[in-house]
Image (cartoon, rainbow, N blue to C red; front, top):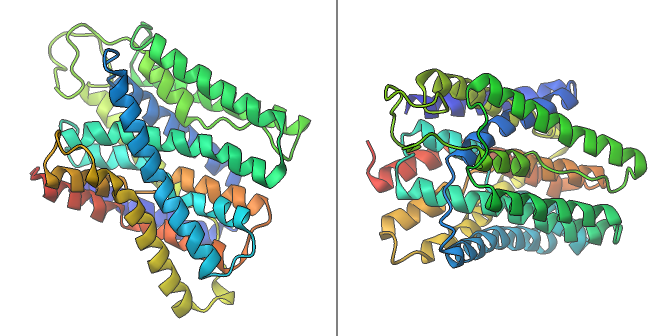
Amino acid sequence: MTKILLYSLLLVFGLISSQFLGGFGEEWIQLGTMFCLSFIMIHVGYEFEIDKSKPKQYGWDYLVAATASLFPWLLCAGYFIWVLDMNSWKEAFLLAKFSATTSVGVLFSMLAAAGLSATWVFRKTRVLAILDDLNTILMMIPVKIFMTGMKWELGVILFMIMVLLWIAWRYLHMWRLPLTWPWVMLYAGLITGLCEVIYLTSKVINDVVPVHIEVLLPAFVLGCMLARPAGHNPHIDDSRAGHQEGPEESDEQRVSAIVAACFMVLVGLSMPQIPHDTIDWVVIASHVVFVTILSNLGKMFPFFCYRKEATIRERLALSIAMFPRGEVGAGVLVVSMSYGLGGIALTVAVLSLALNLLLTGVFIIAVKKLIGVN
Protein backbone atom coordinates (compact mmCIF):
# COMPACT_ATOMS: atom_id res chain seq x y z
CA MET A 1 0.00 0.00 0.00
CA THR A 2 2.90 2.38 0.77
CA LYS A 3 4.41 1.91 -2.68
CA ILE A 4 1.07 2.49 -4.38
CA LEU A 5 0.60 5.73 -2.45
CA LEU A 6 4.16 6.83 -3.23
CA TYR A 7 3.82 6.11 -6.94
CA SER A 8 0.46 7.91 -7.03
CA LEU A 9 1.96 10.97 -5.35
CA LEU A 10 4.86 10.94 -7.82
CA LEU A 11 2.40 10.86 -10.71
CA VAL A 12 0.51 13.81 -9.23
CA PHE A 13 3.76 15.70 -8.63
CA GLY A 14 4.84 15.20 -12.25
CA LEU A 15 1.42 16.13 -13.58
CA ILE A 16 1.25 19.37 -11.57
CA SER A 17 4.84 20.26 -12.45
CA SER A 18 4.14 19.76 -16.17
CA GLN A 19 1.74 22.70 -16.11
CA PHE A 20 4.51 25.10 -15.04
CA LEU A 21 7.27 23.95 -17.37
CA GLY A 22 5.82 25.52 -20.51
CA GLY A 23 7.47 22.91 -22.73
CA PHE A 24 10.88 23.38 -21.09
CA GLY A 25 13.02 20.24 -21.33
CA GLU A 26 10.34 18.41 -23.33
CA GLU A 27 12.82 16.38 -25.39
CA TRP A 28 14.80 15.32 -22.32
CA ILE A 29 11.61 14.34 -20.51
CA GLN A 30 10.61 12.23 -23.50
CA LEU A 31 14.00 10.52 -23.64
CA GLY A 32 13.95 9.87 -19.90
CA THR A 33 10.45 8.39 -20.14
CA MET A 34 11.53 6.16 -23.03
CA PHE A 35 14.60 4.98 -21.12
CA CYS A 36 12.65 4.10 -17.97
CA LEU A 37 9.95 2.39 -20.01
CA SER A 38 12.64 0.35 -21.82
CA PHE A 39 14.11 -0.75 -18.48
CA ILE A 40 10.69 -1.76 -17.15
CA MET A 41 9.67 -3.58 -20.33
CA ILE A 42 12.92 -5.60 -20.49
CA HIS A 43 12.03 -7.01 -17.06
CA VAL A 44 8.43 -7.60 -18.17
CA GLY A 45 9.66 -9.54 -21.19
CA TYR A 46 12.09 -11.49 -19.03
CA GLU A 47 9.21 -12.75 -16.87
CA PHE A 48 6.85 -13.30 -19.82
CA GLU A 49 5.68 -16.87 -20.44
CA ILE A 50 4.37 -18.28 -23.71
CA ASP A 51 3.17 -21.84 -24.14
CA LYS A 52 4.05 -22.45 -27.79
CA SER A 53 1.91 -25.58 -27.82
CA LYS A 54 -1.23 -23.44 -27.39
CA PRO A 55 -1.03 -20.66 -29.99
CA LYS A 56 -4.82 -20.48 -30.25
CA GLN A 57 -5.01 -19.25 -26.65
CA TYR A 58 -2.92 -16.19 -27.55
CA GLY A 59 -5.10 -15.58 -30.58
CA TRP A 60 -8.09 -15.37 -28.23
CA ASP A 61 -6.12 -13.13 -25.84
CA TYR A 62 -5.29 -10.80 -28.73
CA LEU A 63 -8.96 -10.64 -29.71
CA VAL A 64 -9.94 -9.76 -26.13
CA ALA A 65 -7.18 -7.14 -25.89
CA ALA A 66 -8.04 -5.67 -29.30
CA THR A 67 -11.71 -5.40 -28.34
CA ALA A 68 -10.83 -3.81 -25.00
CA SER A 69 -8.80 -1.31 -27.01
CA LEU A 70 -11.44 -0.75 -29.69
CA PHE A 71 -14.47 -0.03 -27.47
CA PRO A 72 -13.07 2.97 -25.54
CA TRP A 73 -11.66 4.34 -28.79
CA LEU A 74 -15.03 4.23 -30.55
CA LEU A 75 -16.97 5.51 -27.53
CA CYS A 76 -14.68 8.52 -27.06
CA ALA A 77 -14.54 9.28 -30.79
CA GLY A 78 -18.35 9.26 -30.88
CA TYR A 79 -18.47 11.61 -27.87
CA PHE A 80 -16.08 14.04 -29.54
CA ILE A 81 -18.20 14.05 -32.72
CA TRP A 82 -21.74 14.09 -31.32
CA VAL A 83 -21.30 15.96 -28.04
CA LEU A 84 -18.23 18.18 -28.54
CA ASP A 85 -19.06 18.88 -32.20
CA MET A 86 -15.74 17.96 -33.78
CA ASN A 87 -16.10 18.46 -37.52
CA SER A 88 -13.82 15.67 -38.73
CA TRP A 89 -14.19 11.95 -38.07
CA LYS A 90 -10.53 11.29 -38.84
CA GLU A 91 -9.43 13.95 -36.33
CA ALA A 92 -11.84 12.56 -33.73
CA PHE A 93 -10.49 9.04 -34.25
CA LEU A 94 -6.90 10.25 -33.90
CA LEU A 95 -7.59 12.21 -30.71
CA ALA A 96 -9.75 9.47 -29.16
CA LYS A 97 -6.91 6.98 -29.56
CA PHE A 98 -5.49 8.26 -26.25
CA SER A 99 -8.19 6.26 -24.46
CA ALA A 100 -7.49 2.95 -26.18
CA THR A 101 -4.22 1.86 -24.64
CA THR A 102 -3.50 0.58 -21.15
CA SER A 103 -0.28 1.97 -19.68
CA VAL A 104 2.01 -1.05 -19.42
CA GLY A 105 4.78 0.66 -17.48
CA VAL A 106 2.48 2.30 -14.93
CA LEU A 107 0.29 -0.79 -14.59
CA PHE A 108 3.04 -3.35 -14.01
CA SER A 109 4.91 -1.11 -11.58
CA MET A 110 1.77 -0.55 -9.52
CA LEU A 111 0.61 -4.19 -9.58
CA ALA A 112 4.06 -5.36 -8.48
CA ALA A 113 4.10 -2.72 -5.72
CA ALA A 114 0.74 -4.08 -4.54
CA GLY A 115 2.17 -7.60 -4.20
CA LEU A 116 0.01 -9.09 -6.96
CA SER A 117 2.78 -10.61 -9.11
CA ALA A 118 1.84 -14.23 -8.29
CA THR A 119 -1.89 -13.90 -9.10
CA TRP A 120 -3.88 -15.00 -12.15
CA VAL A 121 -5.02 -11.40 -12.59
CA PHE A 122 -1.42 -10.19 -12.90
CA ARG A 123 -0.43 -12.92 -15.35
CA LYS A 124 -3.46 -12.37 -17.55
CA THR A 125 -3.21 -8.59 -17.33
CA ARG A 126 0.42 -8.82 -18.39
CA VAL A 127 -0.61 -10.60 -21.60
CA LEU A 128 -3.62 -8.42 -22.35
CA ALA A 129 -1.93 -5.09 -21.62
CA ILE A 130 1.01 -5.88 -23.90
CA LEU A 131 -1.31 -7.05 -26.69
CA ASP A 132 -3.48 -3.99 -26.05
CA ASP A 133 -0.52 -1.65 -26.59
CA LEU A 134 0.60 -3.65 -29.62
CA ASN A 135 -2.87 -3.31 -31.13
CA THR A 136 -2.83 0.44 -30.44
CA ILE A 137 0.53 0.80 -32.20
CA LEU A 138 -0.76 -1.19 -35.18
CA MET A 139 -4.02 0.77 -35.38
CA MET A 140 -2.12 4.08 -35.39
CA ILE A 141 -0.90 3.12 -38.87
CA PRO A 142 -4.35 3.30 -40.60
CA VAL A 143 -5.17 6.39 -38.54
CA LYS A 144 -2.03 8.11 -39.85
CA ILE A 145 -2.93 6.96 -43.37
CA PHE A 146 -6.26 8.78 -42.99
CA MET A 147 -4.41 11.90 -41.84
CA THR A 148 -1.55 11.97 -44.38
CA GLY A 149 -2.35 9.43 -47.09
CA MET A 150 -0.44 6.25 -47.89
CA LYS A 151 3.29 6.64 -47.14
CA TRP A 152 6.06 4.06 -47.46
CA GLU A 153 7.31 4.88 -43.95
CA LEU A 154 4.16 3.36 -42.45
CA GLY A 155 4.88 0.10 -44.29
CA VAL A 156 8.39 0.09 -42.79
CA ILE A 157 6.94 0.44 -39.29
CA LEU A 158 4.53 -2.45 -39.86
CA PHE A 159 7.32 -4.65 -41.25
CA MET A 160 9.58 -3.92 -38.25
CA ILE A 161 6.78 -4.76 -35.82
CA MET A 162 6.17 -8.11 -37.52
CA VAL A 163 9.90 -8.93 -37.48
CA LEU A 164 10.19 -8.10 -33.77
CA LEU A 165 7.22 -10.30 -32.92
CA TRP A 166 8.69 -13.22 -34.88
CA ILE A 167 12.05 -12.80 -33.10
CA ALA A 168 10.35 -12.85 -29.69
CA TRP A 169 8.55 -16.08 -30.61
CA ARG A 170 11.54 -17.78 -32.22
CA TYR A 171 14.20 -16.95 -29.61
CA LEU A 172 12.11 -16.95 -26.42
CA HIS A 173 14.52 -17.04 -23.42
CA MET A 174 17.44 -18.32 -25.52
CA TRP A 175 20.00 -15.48 -25.35
CA ARG A 176 22.45 -15.80 -22.45
CA LEU A 177 23.31 -12.19 -21.67
CA PRO A 178 24.12 -10.54 -18.30
CA LEU A 179 20.99 -9.70 -16.31
CA THR A 180 22.19 -7.34 -13.56
CA TRP A 181 20.80 -3.81 -13.44
CA PRO A 182 23.82 -1.99 -14.95
CA TRP A 183 23.56 -4.26 -17.99
CA VAL A 184 19.79 -3.83 -18.22
CA MET A 185 20.30 -0.06 -18.07
CA LEU A 186 22.80 -0.39 -20.90
CA TYR A 187 20.31 -2.39 -22.97
CA ALA A 188 17.59 0.18 -22.22
CA GLY A 189 19.89 3.04 -23.22
CA LEU A 190 20.87 1.33 -26.47
CA ILE A 191 17.23 0.62 -27.38
CA THR A 192 16.21 4.19 -26.58
CA GLY A 193 19.12 5.60 -28.56
CA LEU A 194 18.51 3.33 -31.55
CA CYS A 195 14.79 4.18 -31.71
CA GLU A 196 15.61 7.89 -31.49
CA VAL A 197 18.27 7.68 -34.22
CA ILE A 198 15.83 5.87 -36.53
CA TYR A 199 13.20 8.51 -35.81
CA LEU A 200 15.49 11.52 -36.37
CA THR A 201 17.03 10.03 -39.51
CA SER A 202 13.63 9.27 -41.04
CA LYS A 203 12.45 12.75 -40.06
CA VAL A 204 15.19 14.26 -42.21
CA ILE A 205 13.85 12.21 -45.12
CA ASN A 206 10.17 12.93 -44.44
CA ASP A 207 9.18 15.14 -41.50
CA VAL A 208 5.45 14.51 -42.11
CA VAL A 209 5.48 10.73 -41.48
CA PRO A 210 8.77 9.75 -39.82
CA VAL A 211 9.51 6.14 -38.85
CA HIS A 212 8.78 6.10 -35.12
CA ILE A 213 9.18 2.73 -33.39
CA GLU A 214 8.00 2.89 -29.76
CA VAL A 215 10.60 1.52 -27.32
CA LEU A 216 7.89 -0.59 -25.67
CA LEU A 217 8.00 -3.38 -28.26
CA PRO A 218 11.77 -3.76 -28.88
CA ALA A 219 12.48 -3.62 -25.12
CA PHE A 220 9.84 -6.24 -24.43
CA VAL A 221 11.22 -8.44 -27.22
CA LEU A 222 14.75 -8.23 -25.82
CA GLY A 223 13.43 -9.22 -22.38
CA CYS A 224 11.67 -12.20 -23.96
CA MET A 225 14.94 -13.30 -25.55
CA LEU A 226 17.02 -13.20 -22.33
CA ALA A 227 17.73 -16.71 -21.04
CA ARG A 228 16.77 -17.61 -17.48
CA PRO A 229 18.82 -19.60 -14.96
CA ALA A 230 17.87 -23.26 -14.49
CA GLY A 231 14.91 -23.66 -12.15
CA HIS A 232 13.93 -20.01 -12.44
CA ASN A 233 10.50 -18.96 -11.22
CA PRO A 234 9.85 -15.22 -11.65
CA HIS A 235 7.31 -15.19 -8.82
CA ILE A 236 9.48 -16.85 -6.15
CA ASP A 237 12.27 -15.02 -4.37
CA ASP A 238 15.11 -17.54 -4.56
CA SER A 239 17.89 -14.96 -4.30
CA ARG A 240 19.81 -17.11 -1.78
CA ALA A 241 19.70 -20.27 -3.84
CA GLY A 242 22.97 -19.59 -5.66
CA HIS A 243 21.45 -19.02 -9.10
CA GLN A 244 22.69 -16.57 -11.68
CA GLU A 245 22.24 -13.03 -10.41
CA GLY A 246 19.28 -11.41 -12.13
CA PRO A 247 16.13 -9.30 -11.72
CA GLU A 248 14.93 -11.32 -8.68
CA GLU A 249 17.78 -10.17 -6.40
CA SER A 250 16.94 -7.66 -3.67
CA ASP A 251 19.42 -5.11 -5.03
CA GLU A 252 17.92 -5.50 -8.48
CA GLN A 253 14.42 -5.01 -7.09
CA ARG A 254 15.56 -1.84 -5.31
CA VAL A 255 16.93 -0.36 -8.54
CA SER A 256 13.77 -1.40 -10.40
CA ALA A 257 11.66 0.42 -7.79
CA ILE A 258 13.76 3.58 -8.23
CA VAL A 259 13.41 3.42 -12.02
CA ALA A 260 9.65 2.89 -11.68
CA ALA A 261 9.44 5.92 -9.35
CA CYS A 262 11.32 8.07 -11.86
CA PHE A 263 9.05 6.78 -14.59
CA MET A 264 5.94 7.89 -12.66
CA VAL A 265 7.30 11.44 -12.38
CA LEU A 266 8.28 11.54 -16.06
CA VAL A 267 4.88 10.26 -17.22
CA GLY A 268 3.27 13.11 -15.29
CA LEU A 269 5.77 15.61 -16.72
CA SER A 270 5.03 14.45 -20.27
CA MET A 271 1.40 15.61 -20.08
CA PRO A 272 0.51 18.48 -22.45
CA GLN A 273 -0.31 21.85 -20.95
CA ILE A 274 -3.91 22.77 -20.20
CA PRO A 275 -5.16 26.25 -21.31
CA HIS A 276 -6.29 27.34 -17.84
CA ASP A 277 -7.45 30.86 -18.73
CA THR A 278 -9.64 30.10 -21.73
CA ILE A 279 -12.01 27.35 -20.55
CA ASP A 280 -15.23 27.09 -18.57
CA TRP A 281 -14.17 24.70 -15.81
CA VAL A 282 -17.70 23.60 -14.90
CA VAL A 283 -18.54 22.58 -18.47
CA ILE A 284 -15.13 21.02 -19.05
CA ALA A 285 -15.32 19.04 -15.79
CA SER A 286 -18.60 17.42 -16.82
CA HIS A 287 -17.15 16.43 -20.22
CA VAL A 288 -14.02 15.06 -18.56
CA VAL A 289 -16.06 12.87 -16.21
CA PHE A 290 -18.20 11.50 -19.05
CA VAL A 291 -15.21 10.78 -21.32
CA THR A 292 -13.35 9.10 -18.45
CA ILE A 293 -16.37 6.92 -17.65
CA LEU A 294 -16.79 5.96 -21.31
CA SER A 295 -13.10 5.15 -21.76
CA ASN A 296 -13.11 2.89 -18.72
CA LEU A 297 -16.43 1.23 -19.55
CA GLY A 298 -14.87 0.29 -22.87
CA LYS A 299 -12.15 -1.56 -20.97
CA MET A 300 -14.70 -3.83 -19.28
CA PHE A 301 -14.90 -6.36 -22.12
CA PRO A 302 -12.52 -8.86 -20.41
CA PHE A 303 -15.12 -9.18 -17.63
CA PHE A 304 -17.29 -11.19 -20.03
CA CYS A 305 -14.44 -13.53 -21.03
CA TYR A 306 -12.38 -16.25 -19.30
CA ARG A 307 -15.37 -17.69 -17.46
CA LYS A 308 -13.73 -21.13 -17.35
CA GLU A 309 -10.47 -19.74 -15.97
CA ALA A 310 -11.48 -17.27 -13.30
CA THR A 311 -14.17 -16.24 -10.84
CA ILE A 312 -16.41 -13.25 -11.40
CA ARG A 313 -14.33 -11.22 -8.91
CA GLU A 314 -11.11 -12.06 -10.74
CA ARG A 315 -12.62 -11.11 -14.09
CA LEU A 316 -13.86 -7.81 -12.66
CA ALA A 317 -10.40 -7.20 -11.18
CA LEU A 318 -8.85 -7.97 -14.58
CA SER A 319 -11.05 -5.37 -16.28
CA ILE A 320 -10.28 -2.70 -13.66
CA ALA A 321 -6.57 -3.50 -13.95
CA MET A 322 -6.82 -2.45 -17.62
CA PHE A 323 -8.03 1.07 -16.67
CA PRO A 324 -4.68 2.87 -16.08
CA ARG A 325 -3.50 5.07 -18.93
CA GLY A 326 -0.18 6.86 -19.22
CA GLU A 327 2.81 7.29 -21.48
CA VAL A 328 1.36 5.90 -24.73
CA GLY A 329 -1.86 7.90 -24.33
CA ALA A 330 0.16 11.06 -23.71
CA GLY A 331 2.16 10.25 -26.85
CA VAL A 332 -1.07 10.04 -28.87
CA LEU A 333 -2.08 13.49 -27.61
CA VAL A 334 1.31 14.89 -28.63
CA VAL A 335 0.85 13.37 -32.11
CA SER A 336 -2.64 14.91 -32.26
CA MET A 337 -1.24 18.35 -31.49
CA SER A 338 1.43 17.90 -34.18
CA TYR A 339 -1.44 17.63 -36.71
CA GLY A 340 -2.88 20.93 -35.48
CA LEU A 341 -5.71 19.52 -33.36
CA GLY A 342 -6.87 21.72 -30.52
CA GLY A 343 -9.96 23.20 -28.94
CA ILE A 344 -12.24 21.85 -26.26
CA ALA A 345 -11.89 18.20 -27.35
CA LEU A 346 -8.11 18.24 -26.86
CA THR A 347 -8.50 19.88 -23.43
CA VAL A 348 -11.06 17.25 -22.39
CA ALA A 349 -8.77 14.45 -23.64
CA VAL A 350 -5.77 15.81 -21.72
CA LEU A 351 -7.75 16.21 -18.51
CA SER A 352 -9.37 12.79 -18.89
CA LEU A 353 -5.96 11.18 -19.24
CA ALA A 354 -4.78 13.15 -16.22
CA LEU A 355 -7.79 12.01 -14.19
CA ASN A 356 -7.08 8.39 -15.06
CA LEU A 357 -3.50 8.89 -13.94
CA LEU A 358 -4.66 10.32 -10.63
CA LEU A 359 -7.01 7.36 -10.12
CA THR A 360 -4.40 4.69 -10.88
CA GLY A 361 -3.75 3.99 -7.22
CA VAL A 362 -7.50 3.68 -6.59
CA PHE A 363 -7.81 1.17 -9.44
CA ILE A 364 -4.97 -0.97 -8.09
CA ILE A 365 -6.40 -0.92 -4.56
CA ALA A 366 -9.76 -2.02 -5.99
CA VAL A 367 -8.05 -4.90 -7.80
CA LYS A 368 -6.31 -5.93 -4.59
CA LYS A 369 -9.55 -5.86 -2.60
CA LEU A 370 -11.45 -7.86 -5.24
CA ILE A 371 -9.01 -10.76 -5.29
CA GLY A 372 -8.44 -10.70 -1.53
CA VAL A 373 -4.67 -10.16 -1.45
CA ASN A 374 -3.40 -8.73 1.83
